[in-house]
Image 1 (cartoon, one colour):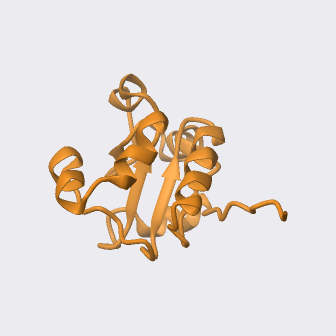
Image 2 (cartoon, helix red, strand yellow; image 1 turned 90 degrees about the vertical axis):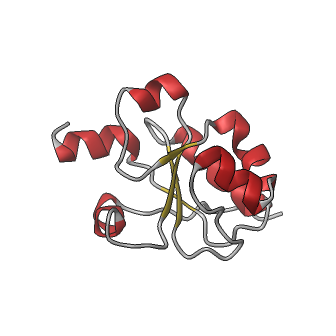
Length: 119
């Protein structure tokens, strides 16, 4: 069986989408406390251990819980990230397994984002 290659997005690519693309769904899979201490604008906090449950919800349940529209299976701009990249990669793999064909990981994660954004 071939190893699944996780699709990734670079800082520059993500920066071009944040706040500009209405179809961007940016999911921060860090814990609630980490998220509260700073996050990428527009990101939704869905901790890694709840990603599968969240993506299994009905669109109505997802919207009620997270305040954003649940991404479609073929959502073009579904991006996961964490603090250093590992949890984001795990979440992206899980999303791929569930059929989210375009899901991508931002491996630079919040660490890179906050360094480049000076936060």
